[in-house]
Length: 400
Image (cartoon, one colour):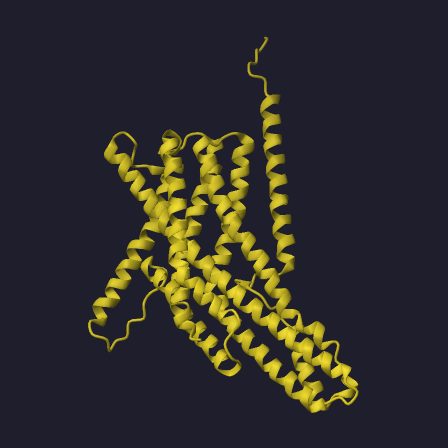
């Protein structure tokens, strides 16, 4: 099954929202004009993404209350994070997505169609409808917040205002347009990550099953056929290496999305918590930050859980290889087993986040520990500030 055809609907959605640049060959008619249109569309969409955080900085500069600076920083970090993820993912997908599809096709030519590829193709047929539904829901939520809490959100729409109908309509249009672009990019990237995870989890699970069956049959037989096991182990080892190569090519597609989500969520969560404890957030800001941080939290939960499962499944063959009776196998079989084991015990197999860490079972505990640590620090910091404030007398009379 052709990987390019399988992901075609998702790629078309990415092209529409400037998350993927179409490949325009120089020999095509009007190639120069097509390239210029692609770059112009990129500049319009991503210029809008980078304009919004710069605009919110203006709200920070005109804010007089010092206690409200940190909550506003949470919004700025979110906006910068969204722009960072979208722009870098645009170049990563444009450069590496075709290579990823080529790697998948090469693997399938040698070892057959991947188990979940038909399922992913069916999902991608309805992917545009899922993306539109998610975008509409998120945009509706943001519009409702702006309409209900106009005064609370007025500084974030500066220099626009809610003074008249025209200005209000312009505020809603720009907000919905921005949130629609951000939401569509996030949903497309999350879909790519989820489909890659499903694809490789099933392949690693199936490979482990093949190993378990063949090694179990070999150990049960009295007249053990070492030659047959030798061919099986070596074939499965080569298939495993091919799977790893395919998976490594997928890392470059989602690494910016992974890093940006983790980098944005932690400070946003801490600043939001600080605003709640200091009671410096307005109702509109509270709902808006809860919606943003909640959405990012959903992505991070999917990342950590899927990444942990994939890492566990990728290392499962090690348990099966340890069951082989190396005394009764040939030297070539032993060599294949050693090579197999050395790769499984080498660098951790999983989604890597800028080579800083790999998504595995340890990531879940590390993420929870980090959030709890910062939450405790923020609460203690807020408590100490409130105690200092209460300790200061409101009026002091000097007696001479």
